[in-house]
Image (cartoon, rainbow, N blue to C red; front, side, top):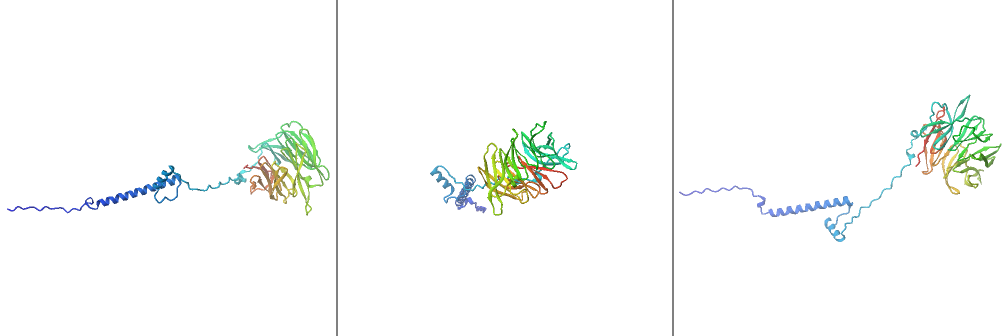
Length: 421
């Protein structure tokens, strides 16, 4: 019997890629692509690190960053990276504190304790961080300024000095840590210029001089006082008194002159006053001089002013004055003292009815509002609120004080502390 052979069947399976003749070439291509990707990633990483650390933003050399670094290290042994240049912005100037000054927030009112029944106030002056002013009440049909009150603006405390006028009114009281001086005035003018050693109020005052007409404004500096007084029908005299010796001297005289109504001023041992100059203008006006004398010497020097001068005031570095008699036509001027002359004369404000000089500003009033001009910044700021009508009363030791005259039911004293730059 013929042997039968069973035919062996083979499954036709798909050949794998490993068995293909192309597999070696595919593996080579994959290795090349992986190497290129790794090189690209490394290059990008180096660029990011250099840019973040050294702020390098220059383009890479054509032969690649790695080759460039290798060559540079081999040549210099140090990698020097030049930072990208940039410009430092100019700093913004610090604004002056007055830029943020809010008059309604900053003003304070002088409030008396209930036991002091005074409703009329006047003539404030400043010394040693305190404010002194006269206070009055109605006696009969008239107001009498019969008290002197010492006020501490930092805590609002009030002390009534234990003295009373011998005549009728206290007018123009001024003080320092050694002396208190005032005019004990009569109701129709005249009176007695009086002085106390401050705190020694248990005796009668020193009578410096009897005044027969007018009410001269007093200035106190150390142990000296000064004033201008009408002594005849057409003559005025400028007096200076040494309170220690009670010796009084006439420094200047004015005959039929408007300068006889211009108040003198003293500060740090220096006395100044206005007098007639030597130049006459085409409209008939004369120039003015501001006379300047040290109380420790006898030498007088003149500051020549091209125009009229009234009520000059000085603080050691600056002089201020107005060119009319406290009217709506008055112009306020400020000048810097530079040795034997004054320079940098500046017109501050037109219509300045009144003004007071202090260490770093001059306060002035226009149209029933109060302003300050700062010497350092050469700027003016309104310091009384828009809603108030005010009358400027004084300035000193950084304070400005005024009377709120919006209503006149009673006297209302208000003040502010001017920030210093």
